[in-house]
Length: 153
Image (tube, rainbow, N blue to C red; front, side, top):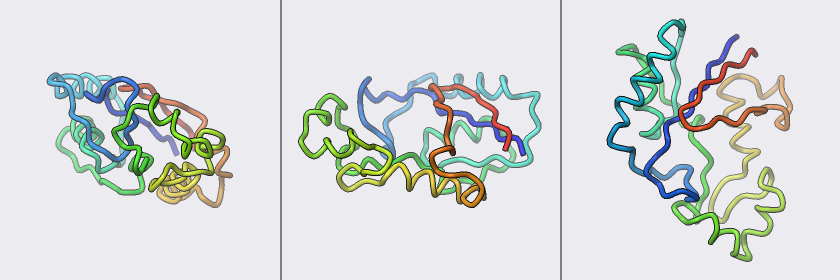
């Protein structure tokens, strides 16, 4: 199976803002940027297109789908940063309650949020990989805004 991963474009959240499940605004030119990414994938054949239901992701998926259906699935949502959503990372890093998270962000959740290992589990369950790949090996790539990456599974 070949999996094509596309990260949403940069939002209007100020640089250094912690956001996962929150919905910062999109830039005024988001539609043209979405079309540009869709054109970059125009030669690809997709048997299905899945997206996080977050607006910044679903709108891009719709542009790539070009009128075909997109399936939104909550398991593809970004990490829930809980009480830290919308706060500057610089402020978070100075908080005493951040120490456990900063020491081991894979296993320790932000206050009121979710553990990264749980995000890996839900995405793995979505892909049917939970039994085949250990969580530590699941994500080996980091995608920049608007970047496309392909993975063979």
